[in-house]
Length: 219
Image 1 (cartoon, one colour):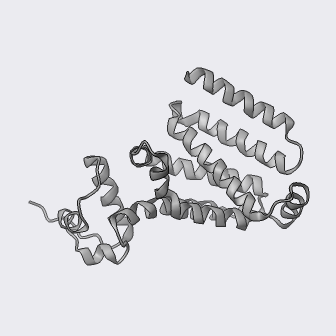
Image 2: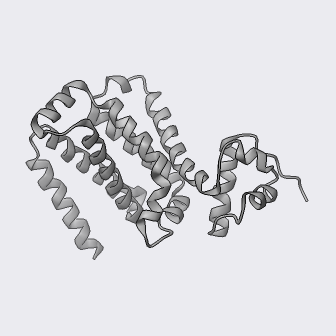
């Protein structure tokens, strides 16, 4: 039997874990067994992760980290407005999710209780809200707080809710190359930013028509 290569990085352990989940449709019974079956030690595992559950949270955070790294490599990214930065993030993030769709569907649709599924996104949620704070421009912040009488924290929470809506739509999307998800992202982001600019009617109607059409077709 060929000797398995010992993973010496976090990414390799994550890859082994994702493969295990896909092949077994269940979590490893213990860190010891997972490490033994894959030719590395518990010490190596614990140098990166505290528990089996924590590795799942870290996987979605790693999707975020890689997305942020990719979009910020674009030399023009800093010059984008907040709307364009948000769209850039979403399209890149869900492209990465699509490359790992089987794992994402398996883990985020595992429990009937959606709260249990969403617990895996705890670390991602923190990083995503920090990202929204980073790209929230001063002029938009002043305008938003002036007209809507809410603080930045409320904007971050609403952005997270929008993220979850997009994620749910993407998980249920069966269109080729997830074309409908791309449309959903564009329309939902456009509508949310026009709400900030106090000019929501046209985009909200357009977004509403899209949702209604998708609901009818789905049923």
